[in-house]
Structure formats: C-alpha cells, structure tokens
Image 1 (cartoon, rainbow, N blue to C red):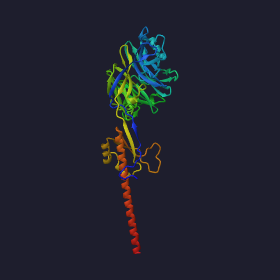
Image 2: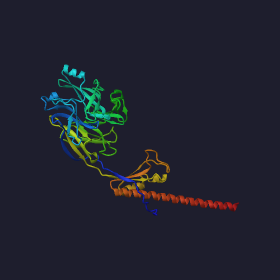
Image 3: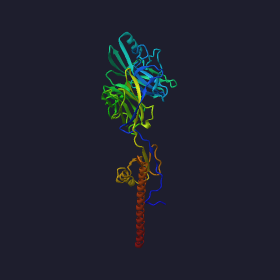
Image 4: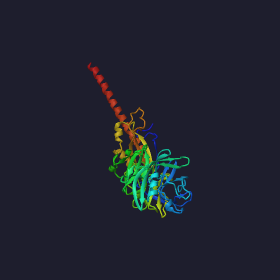
Length: 460
C-alpha cells in the first residue's frame, strides 16, 4: 500500500510529437537540382513552372513555351502549356502530351473560333494564360482560371479572367479543358481572380489573384465556379459580395502559391511560398493559422533566377523540413529546381494527467497559471495547459468530447515525466486532504448526533 506522501504507480498516458521546421523559417542548406527538361529531349524556352496534382498525376504549367529546335521559335510559342511528370521520383523530367511534328506544343486552354478568326483577320495576337494552375474538385475533374490578353503592334491589353473545366484520363494522364465560348467572369478593371493560385477546402474553391500589386482572396462554391454571382471576397473579417470592399491578404508578391502544409506544425498549416514583385530572386515564406492569413513573409534565400518562384510539395518529405522550389533564369528562359532544407525545431514530449475525477476545488486550484502549476512549470521547464471538458463521473463522455485533463509538454522526456508525477502527487494529496476533512466532519456530525440523543433521553 502506497504512502499518502508518494504518488500511486499509475501509468500516465503520453507520447512524442515529431519536430517541425523552425519558425520563422531558417535555411539549413540549398541544393540546385537542375533544369526541368523535356522527356522528348527537345529544347524549350519557357516560363512559369508551377505544378498541380490532378487525377493522381503531377503536372507542370508553363507560359510562353517555344521550341528552340523549330525553325522559328517565335512562331511555335504557346501562351499556356502543360507537361506531365511521368515518374514523381524524377521531378526534373516532364513530357508534353500533345506536340506537333514541328515541336510546337498544343495548349491546354485553347482559343475559341472567334479568337482564331480575330487573329486571322487582323494584327491582333490573342494570348490565354493559366498562371494559377489547376484545382481538382473531384477525382480527375476540376477547373483552371485563365487570363486573356490581346497584343497589337507591341501594345498589350489585359481583357479579363475566365474559368475552364478540366478533365483528366486517370490511366494516360491526358487532360482536356473546356472553355466554352470564352466568356469572361471578371473584366479588365476587376481582380485577376485565380492568377496567383487556387485550392479547394471544405467544398469551396479559394482563389488568390492580383489587383495591382496587391493579392485579394475570393471564394466560390466548388460546384459552380462559373457563376459570377456566387463569388465572395475577404474583407479582413468576413466574405462579402463586393470585391471593392476586399482587403489585400498579400502585398508586393508577384508569383507563388498558398499550400496546406505540416512544414511548420500546428497553428501555421497555411504556408505561402513565392517571390517579390521586384524580381530580386528571393524565396519568401510565411505561415498562418488560417487560409485568410495574415502572413508575415520572410526571406529564406536567394536563388539564381529572378521570378516565377513556386513550391512543389509532392517531391520531398516535409516532415524532414525539405521542399522543392522552382524558378526561372536565363535567356532563353528555363525553369530550374532546387531543394530547400530548413532548420528543424526540437521534438516535443507530452503527458496527460486526468483531473476529470477531481472536485471543483481541486480543478480550480490546479488551473494553469495558478501558483502550484506555475512552480512545476518553472522547476521542470515544461508547459502545462488544460484540455477537454468536464464529464460527470459515472457517465460516458459525449462523442468527440475528451474528459478534462492537464497536458504537459516539453522538449525533454525526463522533465515531462517528472512534471506529470508531481501533478499526480498534488492531486492525490489534495484528494486525501478532502477525504480527511470529510471524515472529520462526519465524525463531528456523529458525535453531535449522539450527544443530542443523550440529552433528549435525559430531558424526556
């Protein structure tokens, strides 16, 4: 039988949390991997290089791709093109799925008959780009936001933004985009919705796009991104219908992506990776608790290129603090990739000490921030928090409810173990005090009851 001055030998639930990358991000090393090349061994000049996972395959999106092996690279240029990564373990090799004999790549988002007619009958060159990549809303089905631009005698006019449905053949990886009649969702003077990136979360498509040098955030139900009236915009607090009331979520960022990532651990699962509008070749990173931000972007390193910096989650293991990024460099332009390795934080050990069975007085006495818990935290160099909800003893906890407990976390397992044992000791000592007090009170009550009965006999 254990002494009331010693904690009972009860197993205390605990575990280990793998370390994540330090925040703010700190670079440990940067390795240049090489140029992203064509499987057919043709030489292409191209910009962009964002990747998207779609239908179980990884794809690269390129802008202004032209075949340097053709007789006239300018004639072979395509404003948007997509190449599939045939082997994810070889991320530097991709293949165009539709290429003409001359080496000219067929675009994913094609011109309409009306736009082809305009080009044939005038000096206008119509360019359709898809800089924000694809977003998959169901297996092998999704959407791509495209931007339309017209060029005439050196003058360029931004026309607006539309959206096209994309279907993937899951066996071959071939893609088909349906643009319809080329209708614009947003005009030339409105935000370039989807130009920065798009993701799906909780049955909504979230699309970041530029308006001047700022990036605004729009969202639309995933089932109807073609419906202009269904779009709402983040105003810093809620989503509103009027885009003019929107608040920028990013500033001075040219290219990049918002990704859902475990790179920086809980509380910063929404990560931005990109480059500034000043084309200075700096890789910028920042994390936030929500996809609306706010983000405080930090410079991680400089790369050989100047812009079009993108992250590629599917290549390396984020749990090791590794991430592939790509950028553009050279003339003619090529897309180059590198591996970032970030400094890792310390591992976290934890223990859970139940207080659900304790009286309200004990629960209040051992609340985090109180003097006794603060003393244990200081002595053991740990952090103690309250988790769960109080459940009446003898009753089952409701679904998804964890009974009330104290959670001990620290970077040293022995210190966490010691703190958990001290908490158990405190609990048992206080419960023993309550029992002694209750026993004393019951004894006093019984003695008073006996005396009352004796007096009653004497008087009657």
